[in-house]
Image (cartoon, rainbow, N blue to C red; front, top):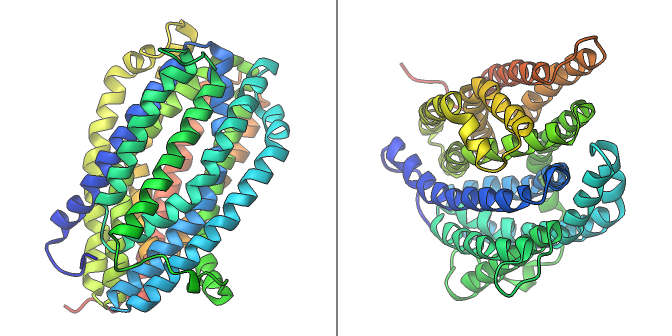
Length: 448
């Protein structure tokens, strides 16, 4: 366990974020390697995997319910020096993880085909997307126990074990991707099926490694079968914190699904361009997401310890650090977005869609950094409803306006990106207003 209630704030945030960023950089490399080999299979494969990948936001919504609540409750217990409570929440999070894993497997098998039929650009893209999802579902289900363990470690101030495991799984996935997708070496060329299978195998390896770590090394929170009987009072507390955070991610699922639907009439090349641009965007968000993930446990421990001044400082330093990172990546996207997209495809139409998407959407990267930072603070305070409200504001701006434009003469794909810029800007303003409101309600007034 690491005490996050002491020490200078900026080095503390960077010290927490750096290992997570390192793991995320490896995750970025995998995303790009995976995209490279999937792109070689053609537009239908890229569009299908991209459309199927939007379902990951649904899974992330459920993992947010689990991970955010575990971080908030365990970090606050650590701040109060209540190890027994921290251990109880950890073990209950494992039970909840098992429930969510079963729901994911059954729901995915039943609904994947129906879902993709509604957003894929054509039959080929739908078929490829369904194949990918069926083989990726075990990996999606295994995300839950992995998130439960990694989040619990993060709440106690330990990020390196999770980072090491993440790096190993990403390296494994990167090795398996060309073997299973393209048939390098002894492996058969399985196409998009190989992409899903490689991911599932890698997540399984991560779960095994984290389980071994908890059995052999972790002492502050640990497996205790006597605590696995469902404690519905704990579940209620977890859901009170986690459901709004899951709702926030679910709204992102709605957003990305809506984008695929909005641009489906422009064809598979347009959806492929958006898929590539979206993957690149997710990759370059990794450093700011690492900072946001660091803010949750830091704010949580300090809130639990009554160090309200440090909670405020955590927020404002986090926003500042995210702003610096986002300025750099915005400049990069304005300068070389076509080169980045062109690395994955030689088709001019796909490059045009993806590069213009990145150039335009990068105009809201700084605003997105504010959203990430505020979200981390909401998690630490144990109230994630404001984060969901700000995401709801984004959807309320984006969906009606984008759908209206879709049915107007002269509708262009770039209009979708402009509306997205507006909606994220609104979300950032709402997030900052709500985080200031939480400070007024939950924290002791500043003393002059």
